[in-house]
Image (tube, rainbow, N blue to C red; front, side):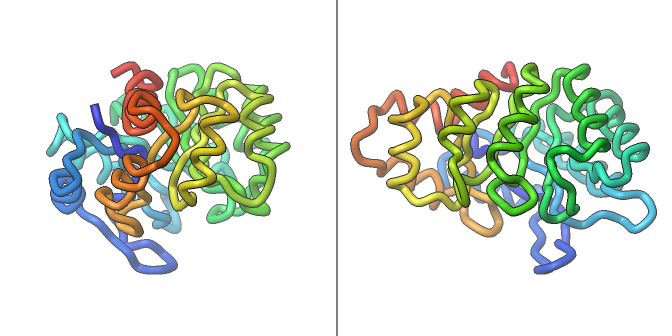
Amino acid sequence: MLIDGHNHVGGPDLVDRKEQSAAEIVRGLDLAGADKAVIFPFNNPHPTEGFKSANNYIAKAVAEFPTRLIGFGRVDPTSPFRAVREVERIGSSLNLVGIKLHPRAQKFMPDNPGLHGVLEIVSDLRLAAVFDSGSDYAPWPEMADLANQFPDIPMIMAHMRKGDYISAAKSAPNIYLGTTKVQPELIVDAVKEIGADRIISGSDSPYVSNEAEINKIRSLDGLSENDKSQMLGLNMARILRL
């Protein structure tokens, strides 16, 4: 099973105005020869309701393409009451399987009390979490501490950048490192350090095409075909119990 683990659907994004429809990402998967994609909202919260409308869009996209799209919702922990209620809705009535959290975009740190409240519900509902990682808002030692406080949550750190992500992954076994916008040699080093079963391939579409990301993983030197298969979908399938 070939799964692209990092894609944005809906929009437009508040900053760069990017957008992508459900039909567009499915066309991208077809061009790449991929089976499925994990999708979540762009950074487009509504001023009074947060990511509620964006999450509804994700649920509708999954309903339109149930065999191709895997839905994650998005919340803003800086509005803790609204965020907790939205996580409950994401995992129950919307039937999505994870959440996206973006410390830099929503300006919160790993010790934010609202974030901890959100993750308690994520753990109770057995959801997965994708984090934007490696920014000043998500330093690796603090992200490792956070992961260790919630060991039942698979935490996919979308980027390997700005700090010792290898040590963070070694110290928290529920951390998975994402290949999104990561140079090939760094992916190979990460596999050698923590194993291919802890690496998740993701394109960041529409910013990078599904095909480009998949070809990047397939062309990595020094790794076995089993290593590549794990990164390209088997790990995500295991995490999400597909």
